[in-house]
Length: 585
Image (cartoon, rainbow, N blue to C red):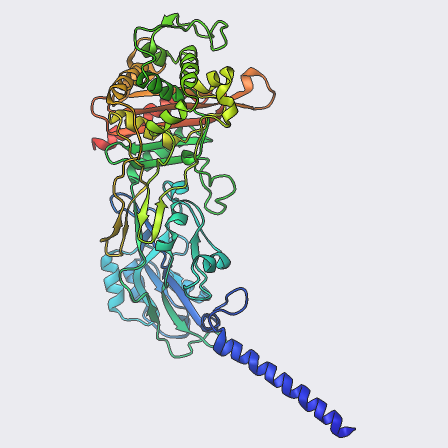
């Protein structure tokens, strides 16, 4: 009986020993870099337990503006102090003299430190190049003057650039062949997400030293500098944003208290985004609490701006010329119009934004072909593949931007309903287009009918500034409007501003001459009680300038405002004036 018990106990102990050995092999041999479902890197974690480090550069690629100015980070010369200084004698007076601060100030910071610190804390003490050289000439262990990269507190064009976040599971899903257990930032919106594979970090640059269980130096006071071995990485993304223009338009949006909406500025010649402002602004600490949406890429109700498409189709198809008159004393339903204009032609109809003209033309066009408005919205660069898309290395049809598709009709059944077609002709009903598309439409007209995909990124660059890949200017495939139609639209859009009866005479005093179109779109929403005074609108102005030699296309939209607030013309004019000042500095 005893032998049997001993045998059983021996087997149990042997099995337990085998299980423990297997577990040890799992930890030390087989899953050292990818332990458990959380993909924990045991090697990294074991070193981290006995290491204190100060990250100099997280290692993720950054975003630059069109001139190479950093958008997502700043670099500062700072003083770094390690906590083991409190256990040794060191010439604090010499360092203090260079900084022009009392020695006690530095000593107090060191005494309070539990790990490596940047002197000055949240607002680091910035050093000159001469101070950096002088401090480093002292060769004091644990005292370093160096250049450190800091994330920008406020990122220009923040919704366009996007945000990053930590998600280990998603990281390994995207990059199964990367370092196992890597706890890195990945892009979760905007350009950060689209260009994530180029930007993702390989390794941090940091200062480290090893400590014992009580925090004392384990191998003396030697501090090591670790950095990626490849000097060309990480890559940076050079955007088309002009930082000065971006900040100027952000200031305009803030001045006029745009709560929802924004501004989008295009370079007409290069078909590039120069500035993109979306409100509400993104909150750094909680970006997805309401400010993450980029309304410049979102399909919205355009209102009368859409009449430009109807006019283009009618001119191109030959169903209207300037001899034909429309009964603009009447609304689209035949009743007296709120603002009667008499019998007027197509040119004056655009200037005064007569609803009856474009409701009638939309019905005539759809009777001819019920998809013709969709077709011309594509021909004029309003919908379709308007953002840059193409082959980049192993990516087929790589998109720079995620843009809402937009639509003219929500269903084919609506195309045969005259009342719905009338509403569609004035940019209401189910018409949904993006501010990016509207800006591209204005750029297409300004170019005489040529349409191009819009870029937000010009290059992916190595760390030394040379281009790894450049994004060429690309035409949008398919037919476009005729040069004659484009020329007529140019004249008509100029009339919106300079005609005696135009809807935007306010813009005649702008620093640049402007051509464009107004839009006041009913949203079907109310602020409080559902009465006319509380009805909410999207107010638009879209145009290009200077009229004689077009350089810029600009869209301004102020969303969900009542008819008596949120005037769009001062917003547009001040934006144009700000661009003029920057051009003539």
